[in-house]
Length: 403
Image 1 (tube, one colour):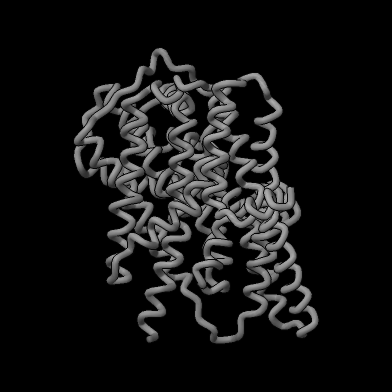
Image 2: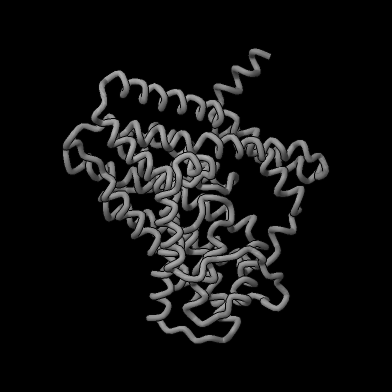
């Protein structure tokens, strides 16, 4: 047994995850009623979601408390890349719509009963209220905007404290990071459970339903991940970005694909940033912030499904209106929740640009939930891996300038 455990621990995490995927798929097809296997996935995601709010608060507060006056970070560059990347993703989805217009069967789609924002103003209002949320409630509800805001406040306040207090804060951050490391080591078992649950509940038919819609959504996300993002990275770094792009997709995108939660993938991204040798003062803030506002995949989902409704209803769209949709989709995507399916409820905001009623828009949301198993997995993989990519791009560009 000791040899088995030693061999298992010495195998790379990616290979262990791949084994978990294969076993989960086989068990899902052969033993679809063994629900206890799916519990492994729920426990893994639950563990990540439970520790992530504490980790974010501890790391951000510690990073700011330890920062000395005049110490530089790359946050401005990172946020700029987040905004450019999200808008470019929305614009890519709009261009694909002109090339491959798609429709949805609205009359046959069950409408969602979940409420959605009334407009972009409501999204902004929600974001502002989340900033001033009770800090304890923000931690309990995984409100990352509120957690970030209070971590910044406490971090700056603690800068004036003595070395003993700062050392305690640093220890707290290190201990929390160690707990995260233990949870991530369980990723192969967790992803086995998640893969099992997906196939056991939906079967292979989930891959064929709404095939064209899935192809357009996944195709747009693949274009952004493999062409648009590398192009942005190349413009900034002036060097081949693909080794970094593929590493981010491999080590961050794979786990995000199965957890389907940007929030749950925060610990994974923080570990990857550490492995890349990035500045903790930057990535301890940029990664949790990116899980909230860097939503290229969400912008694609909102744009594609909105334009599918527009095409179905026979509404003509000129390029100016499509460009406006890209802007609205980018802004709305920033308000998408860091949990599975968070972008779908913002589709009615974009639909309102074309005078589409909320009843029809919510039918489109229903269509989104039908393809959600694949769409949301790919969306989260793109969102989360891009958080690390743009953080690293900004950091490496700063290194290049200083050398």
